[in-house]
Image (cartoon, rainbow over all chains, first blue to last red; front, side, top):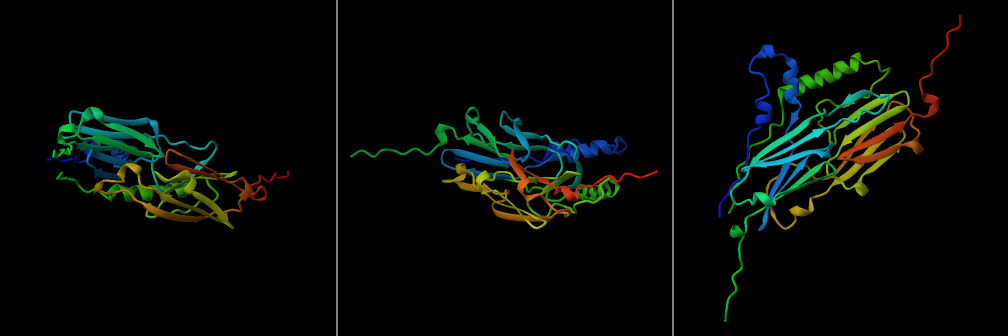
Length: 140
Length: 150
C-alpha cells in the first residue's frame, strides 16, 4: 500500500505576481492577499484528515474542490468594519486563503467531506475499501 | 506505509516588511488623536486588529478553533487580557500526524488601552474564528467639542 499526499507549491501566489514590473503595484498587492493556511495532516486506518486554520472565513465563503486528484481549499475573509470606527492598529490583513494538495490514488474522492467551525476547516479523506487493512478470520 | 511529501510554508515574505511600514504610515497619517501601538509583524499570538472611535475600541482577535467556553476576556485597570486554549480536533485522535503546522495549547495576550473603560459594558463575541471585543470608554473620557465664543 503506497500513496502520497503532495502539497503543490503555492501557484496561486506565483502566477499572480506580474512578470512585467510595469503592470503596477496593485496586482502585486493583490497577490499578497493570498494566504497559505497552516495545515495539520494525519492518517488513520480508514483515511486521512486535514485540518486548516482559516479564521474569518464564513461557511458560505469556503470552497473545497476536488478535480481528479487535486484538492483545493479556498476561503475568502470578509472584514466586518464596525460602524463609525477607524482602523487604529493592524496585525492581520483581509485575505483569500488558498492551499492545494495532490491526493494519492488510495483516497476515495467521492467520500471526501469538509466542514468549517470557528474558522477551522476539517476535511476527511476516506481510503478506498480495497486498501484498508482487512482482518481475516481464522477457522478452527 | 504511506509516504508523505511536503514542502515548507514560507514563513516570511519581503512584502511583510512593506506591509508593516504601510501600517506605521497609516498610523501617522490617520486622523486619530491617539493610536494603539501593536507590535508590527504579528510576532505575538493571537494577532489583533484594533478599530477606534470616540465611543471606544473594537478589538478583533484572530483565534481559529478555540472552544467558546474556554475563551476568557478580562479587564484589570487599563489592561485588556485575552486567554484561551486551542483544542485538538476530534478526528485527529486515534491516528498519526504526518504534518503539523497549526498552533496548539494555551495562550494569553494583554494590551494596554489608552483610556479608562466602562468595564460593565465590555462585550465579546466569537464568530468564524474571530473574537470581537467591544470596549466602550467611560463617558467622562469621551472627546468633547468645546464651543468657541465670539
